[in-house]
Image 1 (cartoon, rainbow, N blue to C red):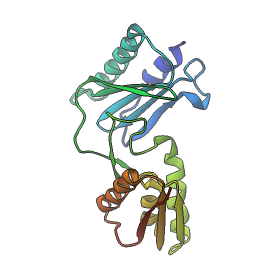
Image 2: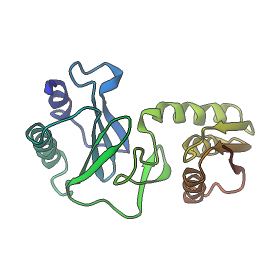
Image 3: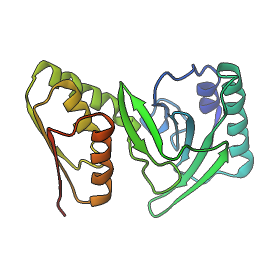
Image 4: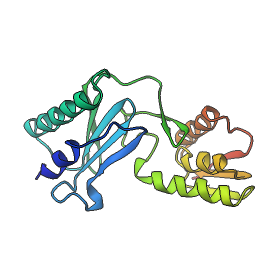
Length: 201
C-alpha cells in the first residue's frame, strides 16, 4: 500500500476541536490509502485498516502521528488504538497511552458514549457527522417535527434531532445492546422526555 497520502494528511493536522474523522480513505480523496481511516475520539486517536499491514508500516504511521501530536498538543498524552478489520473479524490493539472508561466524546455539543477496544463499531459513526448535523438543522427549521429513526444503532441521529427541537423521535433497531447505549446517550444530553426505543428483529 502507498502511505504517502496518509502521511501528507497527518503532517498538517490541526489540533482537533471536536471528535471527528480526519482521513476517510474509502472516500477516494487519498489515492493509495483507500484501506485507511483516521479518527479522533477525544482524547484517543483511532487508526483503522481494512487491509493487512505489517508492523514496520504501522510503526511508521504511529511515529508520524505521534510526532505531529507532540507539535500541536505538547502538554497532552498521546493515545492510539489500531484496528485491522475484514468482513469476519476485527483485531483491535492499544498501541500507545490509555483509553478512558467510560469514554464520553462530544460532537457539535452532543455527548456520546463510545467503546474503542471491542467490536467492529465504536458507538458513533464519525463518517455520518454531516448527516447528524443536517438532521439537527432540519429540526431547527421544523420545530416539533416527528422523526422515525430506523436502524438507530446508538441513536446519534435521535440526539441530534431532539437538540434541534424535534417533538418526538422513535428509535428502532434490531439489537437491544446498541439501543441501551442510545438511551444512555439521551441521558447524557438531558433528552429523556421525547424519545422512545423499540428493539425489533
